[in-house]
Length: 53
Image 1 (cartoon, one colour):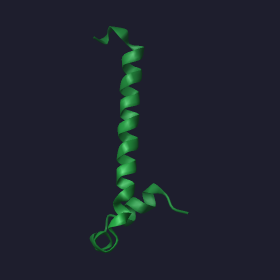
Image 2 (tube, rainbow, N blue to C red):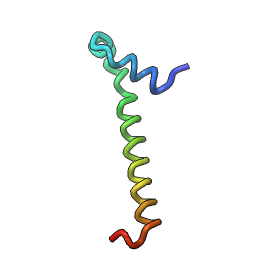
Image 3 (cartoon, rainbow, N blue to C red):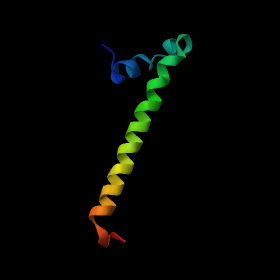
Image 4 (cartoon, rainbow, N blue to C red):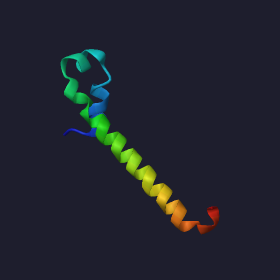
């Protein structure tokens, strides 16, 4: 079974990165997920607190 954590930990080794650069592809998905959660959190905060302006 493969997970994002396993793929990212394997991609930390320089030798693996040189031989198999496609292992860094999960980095883009993790970053996109984190940024999406950040935007959702900011939107919820703005919607829940109308006096913050």
